[in-house]
Image (tube, rainbow, N blue to C red; front, side):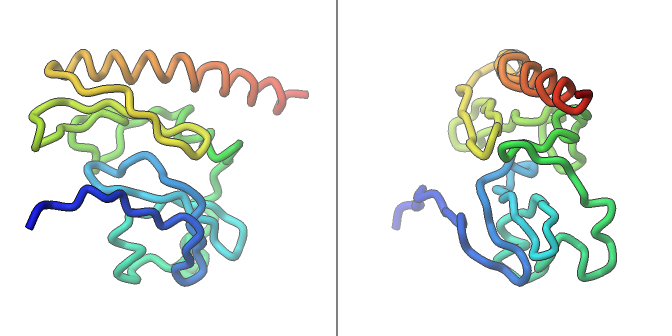
Length: 153
């Protein structure tokens, strides 16, 4: 039996207090989703944690919602872009770049305003990183500049 590559779409589904809004940047090699909690916070949760019932709120149910308050504009998290930090569960060390085991290539992608953009597959890690950086400059830089301008008015 062949491996199904049908993409799971959880958009609109509810898990506990969470409603799935859109796909999010992969968390390492795991698919993740941007969810809105009934308390109004937004949070990013891995598919497996939603489906096995481990994550049912943004953390507000545990009184931990305060550190989860992130600023989303058109589905893009300002803090995550601004920090551009490497998440500890990312396999390559670069956000949006991961190793495709099957094709033995580095994949570059970027999530922006609720959509995931595939930036291509590359034999060389550095080329995938360059593609991701280029996309960040094209998408994130103007977006952050616009956000800062609006925030300072």
